[in-house]
Image 1 (tube, rainbow, N blue to C red):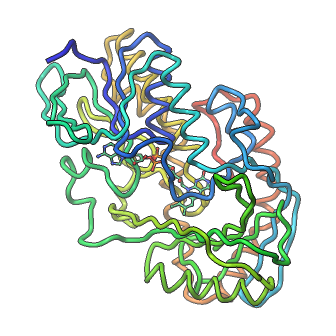
Image 2 (image 1 turned 180 degrees about the vertical axis):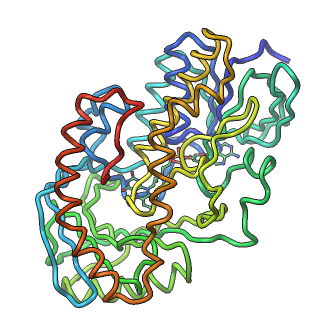
Length: 385
Ligand SMILES: Cc1cc2nc3c(=O)[nH]c(=O)nc-3n(C[C@H](O)[C@H](O)[C@H](O)COP(=O)(O)OP(=O)(O)OC[C@H]3O[C@@H](n4cnc5c(N)ncnc54)[C@H](O)[C@@H]3O)c2cc1C
């Protein structure tokens, strides 16, 4: 067996790259692996708030963004009434974006292997022995002081072994995106939100504009849910959008995503145990109420790396340090879990709730965005608040 790593990370997405980069920047020997060949696609709308650069600790280069950025949002209720507001957000494809984060982590000194899968692990008192397997090769064992599950919501192999009770028999939700070409009466800089329980019981169904590998822009039309059949919901939504916005084109690409973990479980947010840490979606930090998860994924990855460095420095346990750093985001995510929209039986109730909270949410959004500029990252209030 080779010389041990300080940290092994399964998953080369948003959270895994953050752990690897910040660990390597702190002088730790880090290995992160990704089961897919990179750059890889990731079903995601790829929208984030302006504070995302503060979380990443680096400016996003324009060539990693889509040609159109989001400047406005428009909310539609089930009865066709709507509300529009200015809204600034980054817009990117996860394939291009995550590849950039992979490169940054390697430039910081982390070792990276793609087409390499996490298989199993065993904990010993001083380290973790991890089995990984590169495509076409025999399984290999490596040792690390800490192992991090950054495999997102559909895999979570470390968490699955430690907490099988968090997994239902079948997927408890998911998301689908269609990328559609052709003319349509859609504004390419607007994020459209459709609040209708037929289309989504988790949040809103959406339309944005995305730049695909061929450099051309497409309409991204999708939805997500925690219950019901995601494909049926998406078909219903797509038919609705085609008529409403006079969409003339065809679907050129489909992305689909199913969650393995029980999203409704009160134990969903879980940071790990002993030498095993969870980050990002694997830690249950995807937030259906906020409708996003990349900010929490990158932040938790950064915190996990910082926690290892802090525990080495102070002689405390890593989980103690990690829980402290992540307290604001775990508290907010757990609280939001109680506010998920599947509590509403009818669209009228949902509309009443949304309308009554619109003004305060808008004010809080402006206020918290302003305060976030001055807060240390562990005190950031995730948006929308
Ligand atoms: C349809 C949809 C739309 C979304 N839109 C937004 C949005 O607009 N804004 C936002 O902020 N969030 C959005 N999210 C949420 C966001 O995508 C996630 O919160 C975020 O990607 C979580 O990052 P992660 O690093 O935890 O997991 P991921 O980004 O999923 O990365 C996990 C990685 O682990 C790899 N992996 C899996 N198993 C193994 C294994 N055994 N060995 C090695 N590697 C493995 C996977 O291939 C993957 O690359 C959306 C999610 C969905 C499903």
